[in-house]
Image 1 (spheres, rainbow, N blue to C red):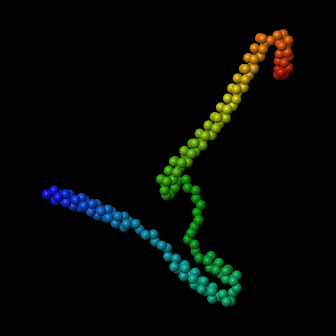
Image 2: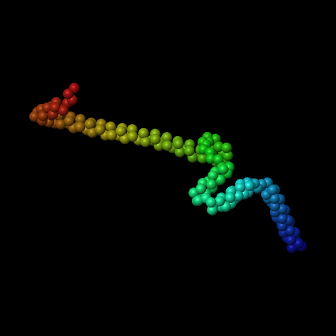
Image 3: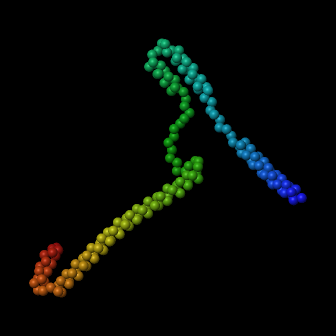
Length: 175
């Protein structure tokens, strides 16, 4: 009895698999029906015209030299209409693939622009910090000289004091 139940369960699972495959197959058939073929333009008329012109030119080869032959070919080819047009456009808002366009603009260009502005600001801030550090070092050195001068004035004898006063007078700014 167990074996029959197991076989029934297997058959049920196989039926479910077959049903899902049938559903998928019908969905695929619907999708294939939606796909349309791009029509290939018919250039047979233009090719026939070119071939007849080339045949006429070949028949006239005996009478004409090669330079006139090339001129004739050029004239015939220049008369053939062309369907290709070149366009140069600047699109601020795209006609197609808007999602990809906005992903590029907002996902890459704007963050990189902000990074560039921040880096420029940090560069400017770094220059000011270096200037402030240099001024601080000069102030420290000046304070050190002042302390040394005061120390010498307190500990020096009269002769050293007179030499210090003359040195101070000679190095004072004359305005």
